[in-house]
Length: 124
Image (cartoon, rainbow, N blue to C red):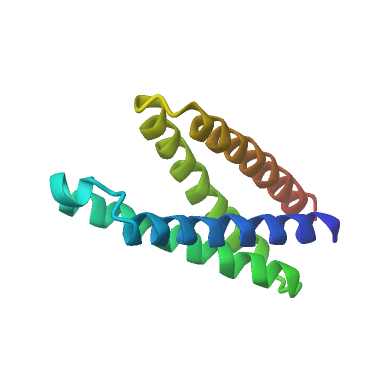
């Protein structure tokens, strides 16, 4: 039960953070790719929103102790891992090391929770 609670809270925080940061960046007009690569960034943002929403939904369902929530969590964390690897490269290229460390931390924590949830599922 503790793993589900930690995973649920983590998933909620990550999902809300992803959606929140994109809203903030867009409102503050800090996404230059809208002018330089509009199609690319539009699809990227859509993928990030889907990842954020799936993370939020899996977090809520884990906290509600829904039986299949772990499966959705595994899918969401796979998407989060891809997103943070991508973001690490983006900010690394810009030499914004604080963001690189943030996304590295998110990568490690998402990977650990993903592995623990998979191990728990296969042990049943």
